Length: 217
Image (cartoon, rainbow, N blue to C red):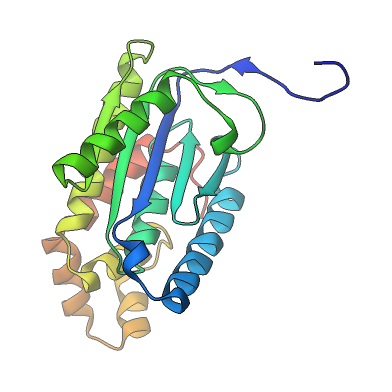
């Protein structure tokens, strides 16, 4: 490659997620521009917060799709949770296996994990499903288990109401107490407590905390 600095390495098997906005092209130019701007902000925050867990930085492709590659499922579910708070529908294709890391952004990488994620995304579109995964033979058993946890967690978030998702986000990712969440949204502690219990948010947090190493508040 001469003096061109292109580093190509075979990495440990990460998880790749491709997120596609459903029917984004049906939005007005103004609304689509606002949506893309919000997604860009979320992805930038995501890259900063989870930089030690990312194999490559998350990237926006085609204006309305996001590509992510992470060492574990937890950063990905955090971003998916953040995106769902925008109140737009997304399709997600998940892949696991080896990747070839070429440059610093996910859309500049390739390999079996990406091929499987694209395969899953195409299947999600053709079957009109919110999330599908596909695991390459190069993935380890642990990667396979992590992918399943990710899919189950996202499915759980989809079953929540918009209010439950907001409360759950603060409860898990901001580590807020019931009292703080109630104060933030101007509602009662009992309402938040019941919502957290019914949505199974507490159970989701336990799974996340159990899997996440070096969790910092």
